[in-house]
Image 1: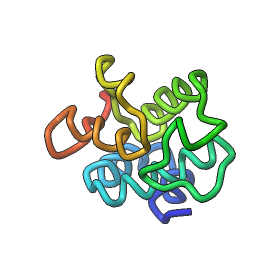
Image 2: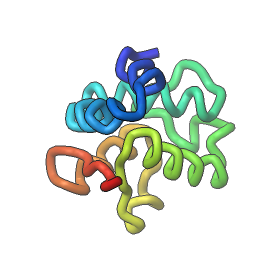
Image 3: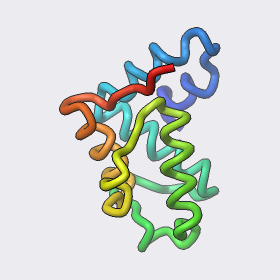
Length: 110
């Protein structure tokens, strides 16, 4: 597990938003955390950014929607509705979040 993912899991509520912003603003850090997050959600080890719904049997349509909804909540990002069908790999999840605001994922307003 990546340090970023573990840090987000352990973060106190008052520290979480700042940590989410730090993780999602760094594509490499966000990618590492997304791989760990998806592995835990899908119950699969050995994922990487090229892992896709075609290469992971547990990644069906229901789990695709779970990945979207839970990633938004866990990382504090928002995905555009039109991007969701094209998010086929974990790298696509990172890229789609980054496209929302150019260089960084946009954090949700609380």
